[in-house]
Length: 469
Image 1: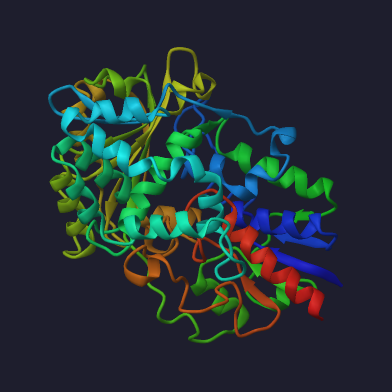
Image 2 (image 1 turned 135 degrees about the vertical axis):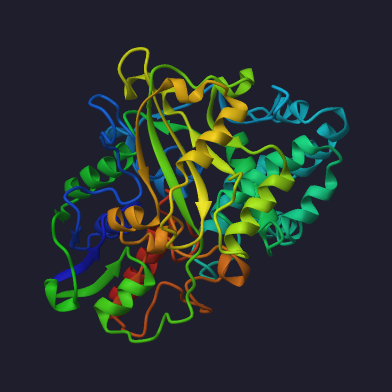
């Protein structure tokens, strides 16, 4: 009998398997797709030689993850590559606000009226970032905070809605960049703890940047998988699990799946009935005949580029999706241009690029034209660079990855209390009513992102259980 079986070979499932195998437990992983990866894959979606990341591509939480940093993933091929700027937010006048590794450079891009306010905002937290990130990404209530004073201070700054945080700033540049950071998790700007989202992304950039993985996000998954095999774990792909009886006998079953799928497979009935899924995304992967022709010079050297004219435009786009149930006419876009740091993703002189906008959960329309009209505002002539495009709305994203219910790449709404208490109100969010079944996906704390911490935290709950029986 195995000690543990993991269902789903995304970053969280692989991390959970690695953590258990490191502690001497026998582990097998079962994945429905023909390759490991989940939200960290790389494929030729458009033309031969163009290597695209179907989901996550820039990894501020990955390089800062306490779980990943504790593993020898560089020995298994993972190499982080940094663009000149982690992120830029261009404006219609050709200027840009930037999120730089340097706090001073970032503050200067906001203008003299807001530079000091930004420095004062991040100064208390950046020197203590490693303790802070470990505290808020670790297993809830399992241990005392390493730095309770800094964590409490962060809570005072971050728990209010981001709209209150933005009142510290007088000009539109800082407000717009911060609104975009919050919108990375598709949360309404007025929601509880949304200020913390913006702060986390900003601090992550200052601490270690927003890198890409050389060769594509698949490198992260492949490194985890190779390490697992060296530890004695086994991997089984093309293996769809419909019920627990499809799996070999084990002392524990760990699911890197949506709560909905776990309830169906493990026979948990309506246990996760109250869990809510958030907005979906519409994503376009491009093969380009050269770099994106951004008007703002800063955007040309940034790995990630946020696209919207103002904080108000971002707020309107989020309201259209989350409250009005429609796709916005001017969508807020998150775009990534990996070739700025990793030119090997495309043939010489060419570039891969992706952009996505938010849409209602399960939306079946086509946002391509709206996305490209928005890009043309900040990069005139963009359409002339397009060699090929691959589009994916909520139905296609859910078909590629069953965890993306209705196209929700965060595996659950990041709004209200569910931003912090997911998948349900519980002191043991990784446990289920079945004593041998656990959940380790992004539906558990600390939530979305390629960081492996949900898997790491769930593994702690599993090995504590295994040592009890």
